[in-house]
Length: 124
Image 1 (tube, rainbow, N blue to C red):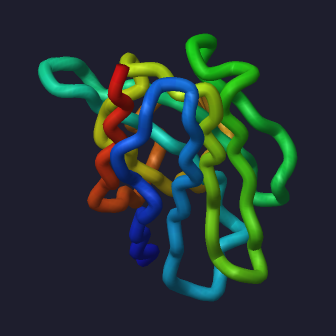
Image 2 (image 1 turned 180 degrees about the vertical axis):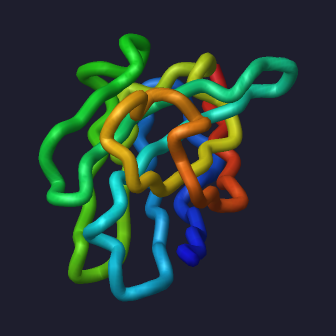
């Protein structure tokens, strides 16, 4: 069992930056690939970024490439999402999630554990 707790969300102006953190419980954090998803009001959940357990092998949704960076610190059981050049359309609740498998990594169904989410609001 893995428990995930996100933090770092908030209100920021367009063009600004935020860094989200996701702290995981347990001693086997490096076994899990980690992902970030988001859900805006009235929209379906959307994949944002993912990273394998060893810290290499990333994937991003096209709309955040070049602006967002996913990283992890296995010694701290934490995964991060650095978000730069934020846009109003990035406004959503952001969730981190953990997976064991290494296929279909952009699909929510591939993830076993989910955090409660953190709100990110980007004003224009």
